[in-house]
Length: 65
Image 1: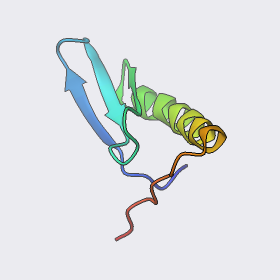
Image 2: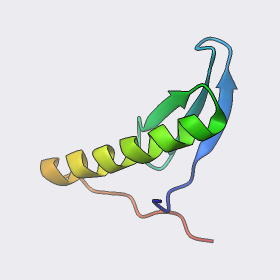
Image 3: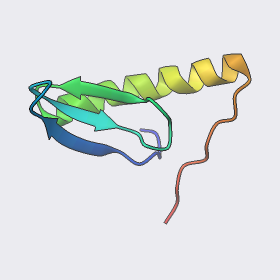
Image 4: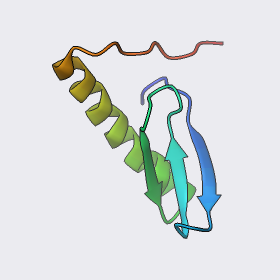
């Protein structure tokens, strides 16, 4: 599991739970349950990071508390 913040909420418009990693612009996923959305988000985070590395983009550090 990546150490990026995750936000999960219900979207009436999409009729699904949405999970997003706000530190990674545009990084979000959906699912029928909050757990499905977070599981999908884990895959998307990995793909986001891989694509950013390939493009030479700066990768934000996870927030630490």
